[in-house]
Length: 217
Image (tube, rainbow, N blue to C red):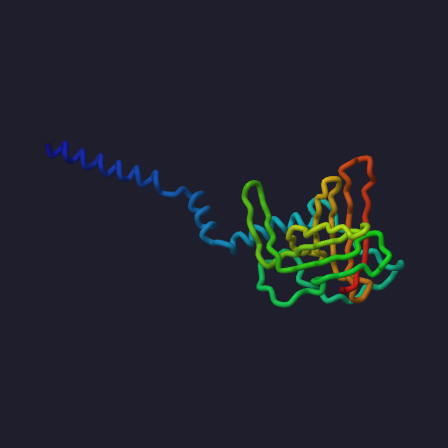
């Protein structure tokens, strides 16, 4: 009887240990739980790495460089803005690009107005997993020349400033994708420079680029 009782007790202990092993987290699960518990700080770091790499290439499109007004024109000593996909920050004050702008050429047939806003959320997705970086991105709103009123392109999704100092944006208008870059002009004091590359869906239409300069409204 004692032998049977001992064996029954031993089997109960083994069963309990086996159940504990089944319910305990594996090393991978523990790492995932740790990441989840870390909260937004971990998400921000992940977004920074992914967004930075994508932004540097302009989502596969190389950024445009500002065209000088004449060959050999000297560049201005522009105060360096906060560059690159750094960690989220509290918003206090605004960089020079912030605000509402109108084309320096009142007779332009291109972009007539530009609006830029900082301290925006940036959402980055890798597969089915998305993360948000708060208070770090930019959005751009452009108006194209139309009649009788200008065409409102709407606001771009939040994007981080590139490492070269430019603010990127993108529109998908169905018939074309528009890649946008904005920054304070390197040649024209106090003016905003905006470049747009138009990539038509129709392969028979020639893609093109425009550069415009704006004064504060």
